Image (cartoon, rainbow, N blue to C red):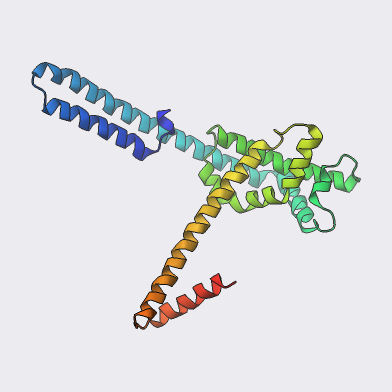
Length: 232
């Protein structure tokens, strides 16, 4: 439980506990209470140090596993061939909707593409499962693969839903879809924050113009770029 807390919260809890113990010791009216308080303080420091060490080791473990997973994708020839087939299917989705690959009766070429789709999705299903169980460093994978995984989730959303209906099993690719949902929310939150910062800059420049202060040339050019971006 403690190792799942962020570092700042672990330190805050330890600091607060030590502060309370020191306050009790300072206002103590008898020396007999000081020894138990000292033991408690030592125990708090020991537990805090052990928790931080375990948490740090776990993080190193997850990063190592995430790197190993990334290396496996680079050396997995089947994954690379399957990903190439998936990209072709996405490009040709207007001619052949991706959801139709979920059907049972397909041509030989279509079956090959379906196998490739399932291979790629199953690869990221296993990754999502590993992330959920604390085996992979989720943030590392997000920074490396967020665009591709989110795109896969968007393009194959209907395909996955159809597979779940045909198999009568809503758990098919569930870890993958959960991973896509989490990463999409995180990317959108970052995008909204970044957009908010840019809007703040626009308003600041407008206020400078409003009070009669002439912006510098670089500020004017930056202002023009921001206005162009928001007018798209």
